[in-house]
Length: 116
Length: 108
Image (cartoon, rainbow over all chains, first blue to last red; front, side, top):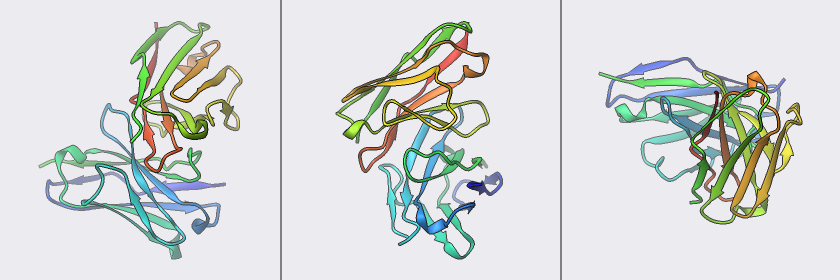
């Protein structure tokens, strides 16, 4: 069955970087784009953008440019979200969600906590 | 960017009652590309409705969506205990996909 499995929770200090992985299975990885969604504690869902898994071309939502980078390793059917210069306000659960929109298939979420 | 405003913020109802949730867009949503998701604590969102009114696979028929343009509605005809959750609308017709801020349906 189609499945997205994300990496485990992370605890980072302000200024550090983090890389979240999203491993796909059950389908041909390069057939469908991958979206990323953020959910801060007790808050709603924010669409961060998507990456074309065929070309590797990313598209970032407003507010997610600069410190956020989407990447791929198609050899292991995995998408990545890297966040640099972490701030306390980056504390959130990050989800990958497979295209097409609207997404039926979501990862289980990865909690990133930024705290000194 | 299309801003989606959901109302009410919280809906307090009893099992068996009807729930009506609203999602209003700041500009017209292209081709009714409007979806509704349900989210329970500690879980990823679950797609309920796409194309404003089509139920996703496996979604009970007590869930229905309607609307077009800038005004959309999710109706739960008779609330079951498992329906108490947070509901989000999302528009996916523009290059910048956006979510509403959510409506919490809680047990009265």
